[in-house]
Image (cartoon, rainbow, N blue to C red):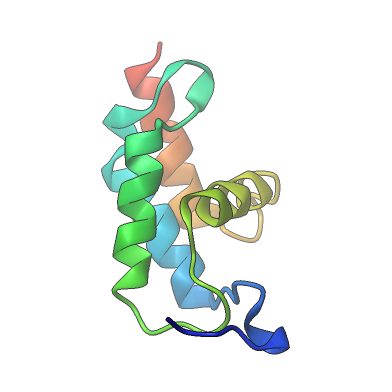
Length: 95
């Protein structure tokens, strides 16, 4: 069991990590439930995919991924391309 140091107690999100999360969600947008919310299964898959990648800080768990999505979806100008893809595909499936 890995003991987390103080600097490891928070997940650290690189630009690549955020992009990977958004592209994963775009690829799984058909799993989106009502209200443009992803289901638990999708978050579990996202966390599993991110766990395969080298990363700094604490693991990117289901809750951490969901929290990052909530923050990123509130700042569309910063993550325009993949975020637009996720939101546009979600609106297509939930019209």
